[in-house]
Figure (cartoon, rainbow, N blue to C red):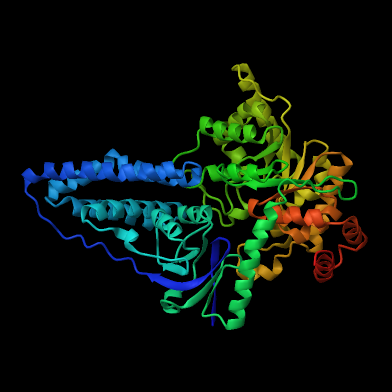
Length: 569
């Protein structure tokens, strides 16, 4: 039995037999042509592009409900319709007197190689998209069925060096439950497609291909980010039981959607949802949350070739507000920087970007980008209950600068005849220790707080949360972290402003009683954890919270861990 650690980009558990997919290289033979044959090759190019575009349109129609998938194939269609691509292919045929197949292969290989050389996740994805499109064209030209000729069954777990979105769709149609990729990231097209089809996916295990063979029995643990090869019988039994319970658990949780939680210590517990991409709003609405507690708008920048326009943003914010009705939609302004970069924004090199020009600092130093976003938010504000939230606020002065900026933008819009919510609420993320320590001063000026526990923990404990070697030091229930949460909650409650937790702690059921004991009653949760957290709230009793309140939460982490386990077995 081997246990190998990787990175999960799509959660879940899949059990089956390894099927190593060695992508066959397309054999493109050189075919010399005469000058008078070039036009015939151009006509062939027009026909094959028309066929692939038609096939792409069918995929777009098929996935019109899931806009994330639709946008992926929209980008493929843009490649197919790019006049420069056609010009380059035709130029290669004219100048070198080579057949269409080789011209297509040369052009797309050159473009893909260029994107790969840039050593950037965004451009690596572009390379995959170009490869996918070229293979679809070439398979038609040489009369090969391509990847679709591979047959899979529900027990197969494909092991890829690389794959493409259209190939993942083929896996889903064949009944596959999970797969492995040598390279990938959580925001890649492959990961988005995998999650939308509920396929477990793990990436990034060094030398996996030297440690696995066809038909090895394997377990993909997308919750722990690991692969178990040829598990011991007892381990296999445990995972099969876990998978059965997981499927049953998912069914049981669906019955909780319409249930209203009881009050805890006479306080109503509000459960909101975090959103990363606009397409999640469709699924989110079916869960009937109390609102959108955090929309991470920086993902509007990710995987794009151009800055999102004011009109594009306006439509997204308006659609969210209308879908949520009278429930709040908290839009966090761009939190670019740190670990979230866009290829379309120029960044100065920083030795430590997590402590650099990110969050609100980035927005204030890029006023044109900031203005465009605030314009869009304010214009959409009349269509629902939109609120604005600033990330990475250090203290009162930060907030005042940003609020003044918003008020100027609002004044300009009103002068131009736009209708806006002039009383729109403006709040801040509490994610830097200085903001928590200064929270009483902030509470007297802002409209609401939302605690971002991910960065608050990272900055308080000086622990890089992405560094696996330091995982033992990343302790959400460390007394220092809890103390800062308590200070912030006390300040909010003293000045009667709403406060929520929107970081990862809010998506972990065992921490809910602890956070309520510290004075929090609103939680913004990852969609995948929403019903699990709701169940914990429904099962929670006053005595559990009182026991935590009576316990000294500022002693040591081990003692706190024990009391947490006691109230949440």
